[in-house]
Length: 231
Image 1 (cartoon, one colour):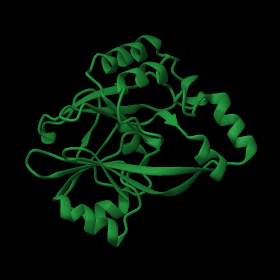
Image 2 (cartoon, rainbow, N blue to C red):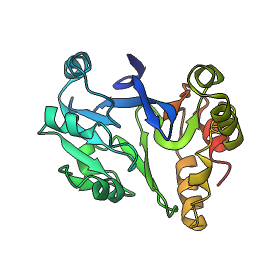
Image 3 (cartoon, helix red, strand yellow):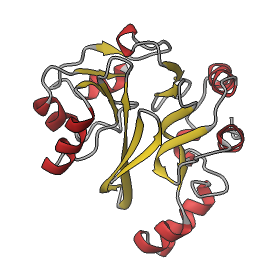
Image 4 (cartoon, rainbow, N blue to C red):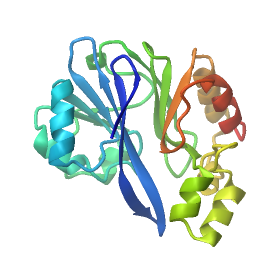
């Protein structure tokens, strides 16, 4: 369930969720900050086993939603960790008025995160924005849906033939790793989007983790250049 990406950063694989009739895998990232507190990105379904494993790593202090789609399991996590600060872009906050957020995520990382993250805000779309994170110590980019990188094996097992055709057509497969087509078409603010891309590519990226698909343990910068080439 846990994959150690580098020192103090882990991937945790979750189950499948239905997204417009397509089974999507879930994945969260746990980062241990210099203080020993934990930063949890895109929390997956919380089970007793998962909670015990997370608690063994440290105290959960921050829960992070990168965009308004990644909110499904925030309620049980906030209930389990009522002292943790919940963060998200304004779009997530507007979508979940039932939750208590500590702050809005935009272009700069909060001071609470102990200066280990750079942050890039892709807000050029009229449909959805996303905050992308760069974990400096491990040189890892953490992104949600700006890259979907499904393997053929996953699609063959879980998606119908017409769904696999759409995945290939949209380029959300290994070898391309694009964002979904309908989202790409909604980036009308082209200048802002290009600036966000340039900022992300200016970072010394070695690894790339996305929420859905095959994450990149090396050659991360080259992967980003290809997966964001539609911008």
